[in-house]
Image 1 (spheres, rainbow, N blue to C red):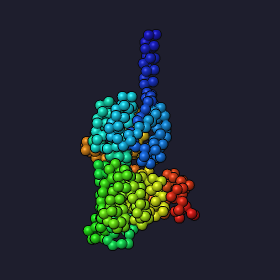
Image 2 (spheres, rainbow, N blue to C red):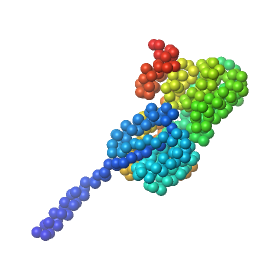
Image 3 (spheres, rainbow, N blue to C red):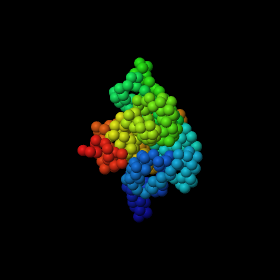
Image 4 (tube, rainbow, N blue to C red):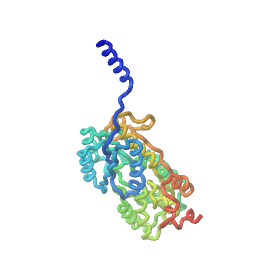
Length: 357
């Protein structure tokens, strides 16, 4: 009887041992640290899409959003508070990536994974990075500009750039230079002003453009900008001199409502955007996989990103950019559910030909 009982127990153990033990679904909080909420994309696209993705991939996990108001020290303090509160993971959009090392080191010491997002990863331990190929932005915008140059020769361009601390700046410039340098060398294009808008703030871009217009006595044919926020600052400076639409913007990124409206009005040649939903979905999948101790979903990681720390680069998900012109707004903006036609045609957009059809 004893042998039979022992044998039965061993058989039962062997039988049940064939079934894997299911790990408990994670519960707690993942913290999304954003640099600000004045940049349209965070509140309009990234935060809502990440919130929905978290409900899909980890319904027991709450996404908590912390806004640093463009203050790096505040973001460091927020990260420390998140870690002290038992964060399961952090999705980080750094205010100032080179200064994010302390956040990354502290999270690593606490065993908390960090997925960096949109902005550069920063020099430290990063589990994954999610972004777009920045060089492609400069190449696409530079090519479009080279094919749609203003008539005046030489074309007098103002380079109203962003913040050189970010790879977004240096990589875009590589793309711009591919098409602009030959035109500058053969004197088709003349760069009459060049200035950087620190932190990509519109106010800094406006001040730079005002100084450029003073320096050149308004003799400018076009302005190259790096995103739509700085583009808005440049337009404010042009407006004060009644030059809106006369001095066209080239470049632009993030596809803000005002940026797309400027494209429709002909004030801005084109715009570009990341696929917000795809980026947000990837970031959530990657942070959840790290929290669970799983590998990244097959095929999700498709590149690497140098952060001057991780040997071979940070494993990354790079989403393709979307190029937007007045001819494809229906497909790239409205059908993609970035904005409705009603939104585009409100305010300054009401005067666009697109809105009168």
